[in-house]
Length: 250
Image (cartoon, rainbow, N blue to C red; front, side):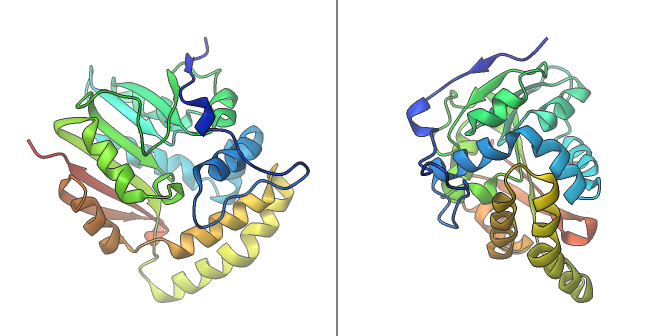
């Protein structure tokens, strides 16, 4: 059985790409452009992620679930959930997880998954205050035009004492590895994406947005400044990805 799909604020979710143009966002992260770009990659999004990450995406999802530490009955918001693969992972410990994303195309591509799905703007979440025991955003905070605003919104919908887990591309900690990774991002990744993705231009944006993203300590400071406490992180895959964890104050 597929999950329910709740459509909210449709006027904010349509792309503004000219007819015949290749949808991709710019580094200003306009939400309409981001939604249109992800709509265009939805069909092959999951398989492309697995290919480009060399299968590491599965390990990153598992690490995110363990960092959430859900128990039976916990309610979890999975923001920027895409097709819901990460949301299904979050239910494995007995929690009730809701997938939310700005891209209707991504949500529709994941409708066969048995999790509830909600169309949502990260800067204006359609959820009540203090409604979730835990909130996550994996590889999505980087795509929001105002990450600080999104972190504040996530704090608003989290119960006092609840948890935040941010899984995001980050900065490799070993300089030689960082150089190799940088070369992969800007050269090899776009070539591979051309062969496996339905919208290779989106993966050029991916590389550019990763290069512009804050380091692990910088992101930790921003999380702490937007309604969260006890902020810490650990690196995955040599710092290609970092898991930031925090708690909403009681």
